[in-house]
Image 1 (cartoon, rainbow, N blue to C red):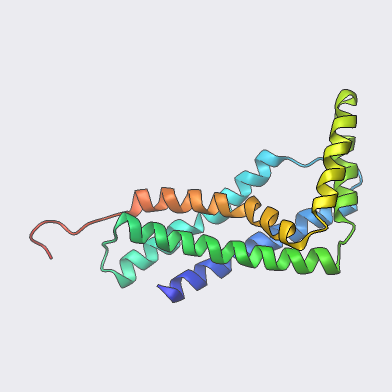
Image 2 (image 1 turned 120 degrees about the vertical axis):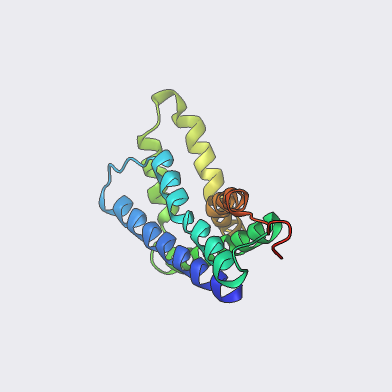
Length: 171
């Protein structure tokens, strides 16, 4: 299981990281960048869908085609955790070494896309966020919260679909 978790977790993590770097670079390159949260999360679901194949691979190659819901979920959750951890580590290096002004750039984009009535409240919210982002533990937790829940949801769905018990009398 370890090999499978690492292989699929690192693969998903690398794809997530590449996507993150591309998106941040697009944001820096285009001062009128308009993000799309729905599209971003849909892309993450698509990337995390590799969890399904990781669990299926483990079930078919190492467990003879049978896996309990619990073992399938555990495998998928571990794959999601490995991928998310790689994402967090890369973001920490990328943020602190290459884009330390990310919150300022992000705030500017958020405020550009606000309605005039929301600017005051959104400005305060972003100022509070910037203050919290000075704490590395907050950066780690918020970064995990971006990706890990999606990975766990995909792991849950994969476990539900892939669970298979041996037929009576065949074991």
